[in-house]
Length: 112
Length: 113
Image (cartoon, rainbow over all chains, first blue to last red; front, top):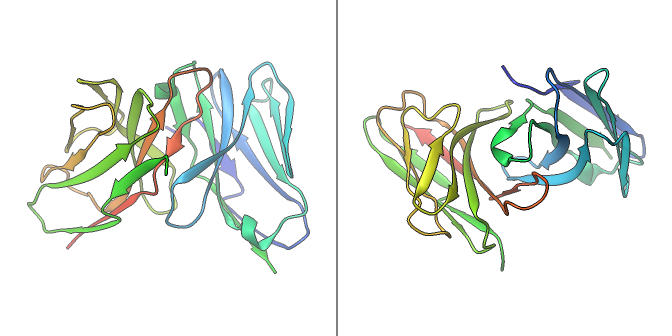
């Protein structure tokens, strides 16, 4: 079974609104990462948050991690049509990329 | 251009045929990975290699084979033993340094006809 599961599976918002995606996981992790995938393309790394961190920011992205609830959220502020993509969380059980497990993703559509 | 090159982008396979997907990188990364992605799904690890001449099975290795004769190259062969090969295949690399961030190629679509 997959370690990380995103919620919702699909999200549709208007340009300028904020988009929030959630990721839940089952076991203790070393870190959690968020990736973006445009349709038919490879994944692009967005942000990594370690198990001893609670919040990280990168531009319009804000990621939180609650290890007690085994959950993370990705907030995209002031969304743009170009943010339309699938967003995946990936959990790392250790320092090795071999232990990286991907969720099934949230499909975000930003309407102009 | 530095990066990861996957080819071909689109490939059609007849039932019973083996096909090979190419993955080349010039990032000087030690580790390379192959993932499979089915529509609307996450990624599943097929094979990975941490150094030249060594590779390990991932979660869904049955019906696939790989080689790692050069640091830059990690080709994936989808054999006739893979019963449901139609999918999007992603190659990735990892510098094997701090953190787990991995870098992806643009993917290859394989369709069985």
